[in-house]
Image 1 (cartoon, rainbow, N blue to C red):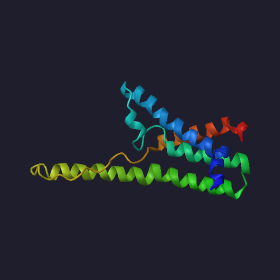
Image 2: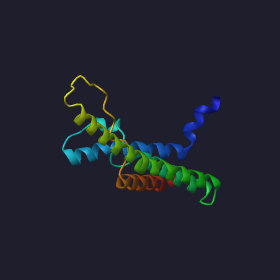
Image 3: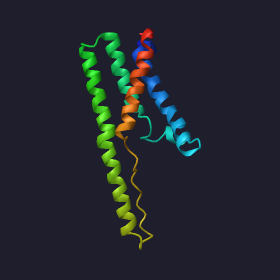
Length: 151
């Protein structure tokens, strides 16, 4: 347990977390540009531009490649992990969001006459668009390359 304090000495981890934080904070700027107002709600909801998940995992994979080597098993693991996370963000979670939207619409239409029906609505914004994932990925790799001297 005494080595737990050394976790912040892991520059790859710290830079990946910084990339995630930058992506999350940039959502505020994107929201301001799109809607003309600051919404801190974007910091706690899923989805949005850019994908913080993609920024985190691509920064992590690039950092592992830069420090351990591009032909290392560790880079292969980090890359496969990144691909799975990004596929899930843009594929599976996006599809689940579309299904939730359709189910919410069906509930609204079917139970319009029964206002006593009070089921909770399903969360519709679950995933990212492919563009949001790509922008997050580019951001993650860029931050990793900018932090390369720190490795």
